[in-house]
Image 1: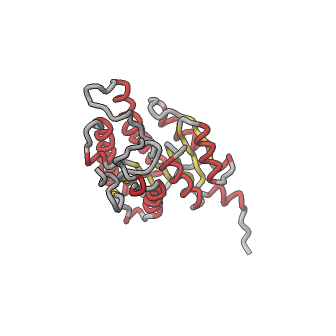
Image 2: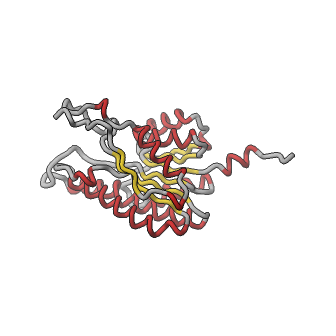
Image 3: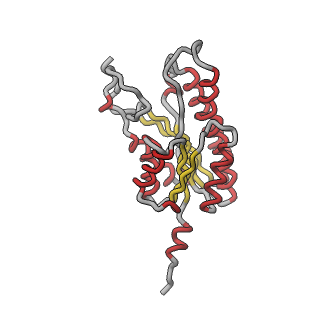
Length: 249
């Protein structure tokens, strides 16, 4: 009878990076990846939140690496990919979940620093992370990249011009990269959710939060992409609530 080394099984377990993993959608995605046997590199700016996420996975520290990082920094993509690969020796899944936006305001009143941060966190860094991850994944026979976009990319709401542009850019990038990477076995897809009930959406009496999507809904879509074959992977998944949360207006 063939004997299997448990340590070898752990070493062979797939490795996933999740950005913005401290709460909300990122935490839900992390928990689902952990449940399905992935080792994890979880990244965000808040250590306490990342510690809570890691504790919720039930994984030991060696299997759930915490990386404190500001994804607006120019060297963040290289630093994050290197941290994961140096620790685990491989990379199989990248989920570009982190996003940022200031409170809704007119374009004229927007600060240049806020504009730059939106573009950096929502577009520049996800592109760079995808490029670096795809290079490593292609050499190892394949992998999965999931970009979390937003329905704002299509709805283009007033007061969110730069945010909408950043998410629209992420969708365009995903579609172009999908066509380019699929021959190498690297899957890249985007998820386009409607309103999700997280702390990022402030209280609004016109908003029926009970009708909003849940973070677990987005996590389920991520796992659909992760589990898809390279030949049948969707380029994009749009998820909308069954009832419009803004129907009270």
